[in-house]
Amino acid sequence: MANPTLAIVGRPNVGKSTIFNRIAGERIAIVEDTPGVTRDRIYAHGEWLGRKFNIIDTGGIDIGDEPFLTQITEQAKIAIDEADVIVFVTSIKEGVTDADERVAKILYQADKPVILAVNKVDNPELRNEIYDFYSLGFGDPIPVAGTHGIGIGDLLDKVCQAFPDDQKQVDDQSIKFSLIGRPNVGKSSLVNAILGENRVIVSSVEGTTRDAIDTKFVAPDGTEYTMIDTAGIRKKGKVYENTEKYSVLRAMQAIDRSDVVLVVLDAETGIREQDKHVAGYAHEAGRGIIIVVNKWDTVDKNGYTMHQFEQTIREEFQYLSYAPIVFVSAKTHQRLNRLPALIKQVDQNHSQRIQSAVLNDVLMDAIAHNPTPTENGRRLRVYYATQVAIKPPTFVIFVNDPDLMHFSYERYLENQIREAFDFTGTPLHLIERKRK
Image (cartoon, rainbow, N blue to C red; front, side, top):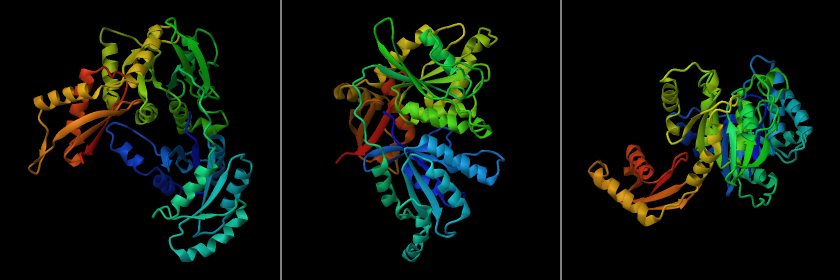
């Protein structure tokens, strides 16, 4: 089930992005520290008191040279479309402005909970000035200071109370997978080709797929699949057509519900920056990943074309070294018959559990061949490891001091685990903890 979504809305210069980063917390830093992951801060994950959710920073949506008031209007409309809860950010320094009132009028039309936050309340004396904001008509304003984190907890308490209640998930044993990628790479054509029938509108115009569509089918071996076709950019005028980030947001919601994600690339146009955006989110979300190069029938080939393209993918997506690559054509159905079995294999690897005794034998052999590093005369000691989770497989390694685990040695241990066990298509999470 997809996590609920929080949108942060308001006029420019009220501190939306500061509050966004404060709520996202360490996740932003983790993304930046991952080599090769190109990411935009328009979206992130948040968590408060065990409740996970997605966050949209509408201030990060660039709609070009549109007039000032049009920008505010379109950003607010995106929040209305996508969010379960909206945080309306204002600033105590300027008080209630005409632009604030314009945003408020737009949000009145939303059938969504709206929580009013008054930012830049850096000292208690300013709290007496928040009463003017009752005039906006959204109940009690919450004073916050995004820069210092003051009041963010109170804000998130109210946000989580406003999220819709968790619905009980239907016991569905099918393998859920989604196709993600920038507009016009042929996602809908692949859906139709895989199903063998036209269930989704296919068009060469970017953004014609309006809403995510779930389609169930059964493979010849009896395996049940649920295919989630991500929605493209909605055609609501020039603003949406020019906002590539909007399609990334739609893909994000489908990824949350998927076991395996097919990252679709266009063999004709090659790799673009937005391909890295959506693939980076799938990687961070810990989903099983398959890289699918579509429109392979349109490429002029020689004996080295596929190998060269694969090398380019590995260089551009270094963090997806574990993901298998398939070259297909939705038009000619080339190699499409391989996808269901590969999706099944990746899903099984994604759910794989390794016995602790076997895991520790592998790690001890790896350490014997390549001893642990030392720092300032202290040597890293690895005592024991155990798997604590699946989807993705997560391993806790107990050591004498986690700070002594250099990232290169962690990568070495991960590679040794991959050599011993088949984890094709799935990321691995290694966590170092000090043995008590």
